[in-house]
Amino acid sequence: MKKVILSVAIIAGMLVSTNIQKVHALENQPSVTMALEDDGFIEVQLQDLSEVVQTAVNSFTQEYNIVTLKYNAEKQLTKVELTKKDDQSSRTVYLDAEGKEVAAPVEAEEPQKQQEEIELP
Image 1 (cartoon, rainbow, N blue to C red):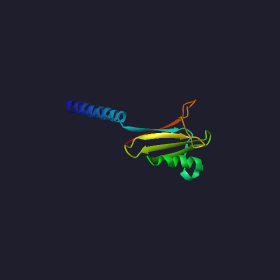
Image 2 (cartoon, rainbow, N blue to C red):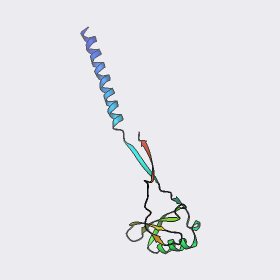
Image 3 (cartoon, helix red, strand yellow):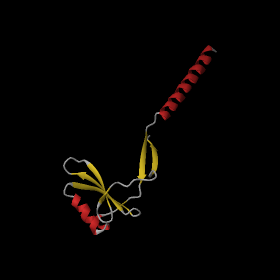
Image 4 (cartoon, helix red, strand yellow):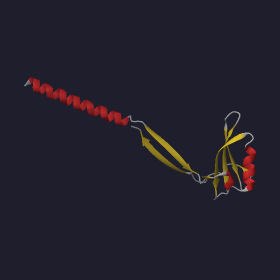
């Protein structure tokens, strides 16, 4: 009888230990969080922009590589993300409809952010 009680106690202890390990494993499971920012700019091709803006963008190509071209129709702004050829530093330039460089637009409200969380196995 003592062996039966001892066996039940050992089995119960093992089950409790296993369940605790599962709970800790779930709490420590790594996850990746991606934040996507929607600032109203959509990607465009250089030929989709006006000739004046194309000329302004092409003037940057002597010193910089163009990473992305984005356009905001509501604000009539072109966002050009550049990487310098010499030291790989990045720069963002905003151009108006006449191809003139303007300061970064000030957001009255916080841009819409979408967050997506992915759990890794």
